[in-house]
Length: 254
View 1: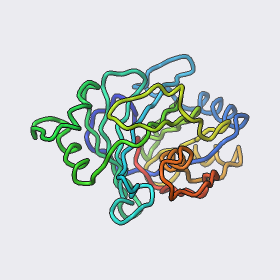
View 2 (view 1 turned 90 degrees about the horizontal axis):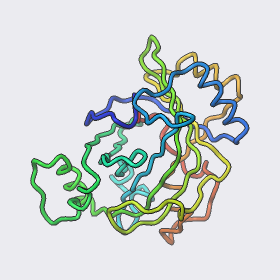
View 3 (view 1 turned 180 degrees about the vertical axis):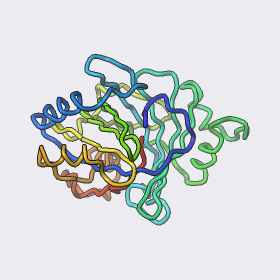
View 4 (view 1 turned 90 degrees about the vertical axis):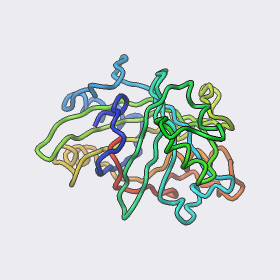
């Protein structure tokens, strides 16, 4: 259930429930988690056990993923980087029958340019991703970055994980490369995203957390927030309430 250095190409299905928190509630939840859950063993340990996630998201010229048109509604493609690592992950999250599965491959940062080359050898780890980008007519459209705290535990039903994201920022991109996120647009300012990740049904420990702080699940899609806030497609409606952009409740451990 570790996020960053996990190298498996395919992940198991799991459930995820999201909440949007104020800074005050987020501070209480952070203290609760530090008292009851262990630090993610594979996360980069900085002060406060936090690390940065930066992802490039892909869509078509018509923003078929954003508008959930046809088969495009089922999958999101992104390239994820942790802190300033020279390793990046080519990821596809595919939703089917209300569940999401992930396929990811690790490449070196300098290899990103190979995704824009006209032909690729099928022995390259990113070959499958190169194929999908061309088949789906994808191009990079935006970068999303944020700071994450992750805590984990093992239960009798399997591992569980809590993440708390803050400082969401997004910027438009036109090439296969990361940009300085200091110039990005702030998303969900003064709000945090809490994600509870688990297999099967919600564990008792997370139920106690939800009850203690009177938390209400609220679906939120970082990608849809970014496209709307950046005005990347003229067909978007200026609706900043995250409840306007539902995300599946059932999702993959990531």
